[in-house]
Image (spheres, rainbow over the protein chains, first blue to last red):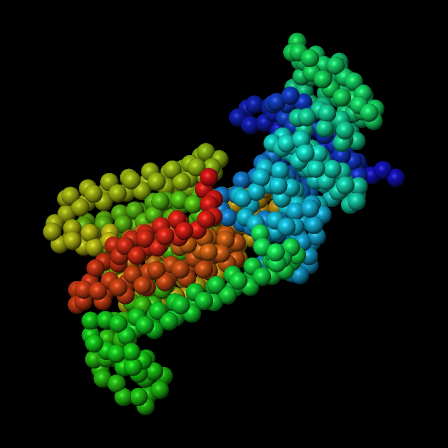
Length: 259
Length: 355
């Protein structure tokens, strides 16, 4: 049985009279990794933020498990959906443990229970960053920071994980590590992940489904093989590209020149 | 890293929490001890023993004490010491909450224009003799309080016009501070000798006017506001990671910001209305705590308050004893004590977070 976990229906967003998203509709199934791709300004990050209620769409509805998201209390909603920003800056000194513990905010009152501490500790272990527990966030590298931001979202125990360009500031090793964690997570916990992605080749390798955005609208949706073809890339990005198959038969994109 | 470093995250957390709790308790004891010490210090030569007998005599009527000692200890020293502690707590707590909610290490009641607003209100009352609520005994304090609140209303209102951006709010606060300072300068310029002197004293701040009736109003106010602010600790923690993350953790960012700013403003305004401008404590106390125990607001808020109390009580005790029987305004001495201490911590601690 395949269940629709998250549904976006006819979503519009804009500000100062400028439309950013125009009539976006999507369905995301349970246990799927979905990548949102498209050129700069296509609205990938904005769509992620609209789904997470960080931005309030002017029109349209987001359903999660068939419930209208806007009807849920912000606390209940934040127990279901976790968000990993593109980059995290902490103005003040916090330890890694304290930052991940913030992910428990939707679940706790004022007192931290032993259970919360266990969940944080388990999450750190899962991400392979437990040795950083007592380190200060600003002492860590970009890749480590990204993992900590993910750990915080995981500590929320969400059913849907939203990631805003999770690999854009990382070296190739950390890119692969982060993507492997997403994959493992979705597989082990049977959650869904939606990512805004710049890197088409990572999207191709790690996504079950790709949503191509163009000019504020959904251009095409489908599995990587059917979406990542030269014709689509030329029309969406304005770039002539050669698409070859990698060793696992997934499309590998080599951009040639702008048209 | 040392060999016996513990990698069990749960234990790391338990240890850190214990350390922070212990630190809070130590601060609490330090404030109490300093207060005890301060009771026996002063122009009138009453030793620690006699000072205590006076306090004890209040609970045990059998103790014999002189009326002179009673007046000095009960009417002069005790309310002043309590006032120093309460004011220090208020400024420290308000500073921590404001810095947290605005994600900015430079914010304090001073930088947001609240102190200048209060000073302007006080100066108007002193020089022109007019109060918002008409004349009366508390005309200066009430004017100062209301002008302080008014400043926050204006500053927040301006930031609302730009989508409640933090930058706009801080800059509007700084600008309002300058505007009020200009009004104060104008008032100083046109005022007579007596009024000028009084305005200058108010601007330097001092605890020499402390009275029981003020202390009795302020104790519950400060305790209640501090407790409410502490209940927002988790929201403040989450907000330091940015509005988007806070919002994704289920926090209504704008509402929390407005609530915390309002509470911190009332907290500040209600003490400086009585003491005059006491700068630096609101800015420095949270930083001292962050350098020592990190930024978790569950500990930061109470510790910042206690550090504020320690700094102000130490400064005030020094003020009234160093060149007794005269005294130096405490506003001056907080800088002399606070700045070197802060700079020492800043340079000595390896940790850095303002990139």
